[in-house]
Image 1 (cartoon, rainbow, N blue to C red):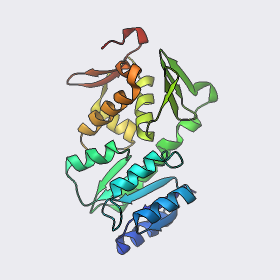
Image 2 (image 1 turned 135 degrees about the vertical axis):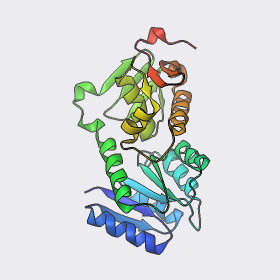
Image 3 (image 1 turned 180 degrees about the horizontal axis):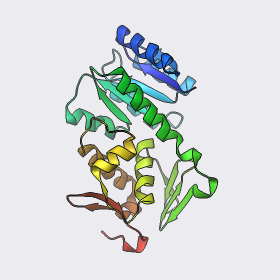
Image 4 (image 1 turned 135 degrees about the horizontal axis):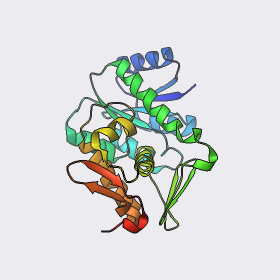
Length: 235
């Protein structure tokens, strides 16, 4: 049974969310404040966190940042819940490592579908046969089983979504991936977010890849492509 932590200070909404999560077969935990949510996340190791951005003690963005900076919790998917739907707010959320961003009011059914998609996506790599777990490509090494990435023997930290994006691009190397296709396949469902989200994630991914950044190529007006041979990579 997957465990979901709800960090939401609006009592009625918190109760609606925990009730529907339990009805859907999840174990649901709840916290009304950011500090308490961080404590529960570290103590209970939930499979996913639903995080309100407007909390009475800490901003949800700070809670997300703390989760992603802590080695014990950085791998936990985070879904942000907010009344603010401007694109810049969404971009900031994704830049902090959030896996999804849902604007209030929202459909509980849609939320449950998104949670299901994120948890399924997070579980997929461990279902691969061991022989398929390791990737070596030029100066880039990826361990799919352990969700770890190295560039020139230096390990880099990726969010779960960035890791999924990198592996998806690699597995489809030499084939251009449109932004819409990446939204469908990496995010797991047709999310209510703009294609700029893909650009933001690819930009951050390339920055983290450092010496391997040019393996991911921008195809202007179309999308992105992972180059088929490390010898092809150029600035």
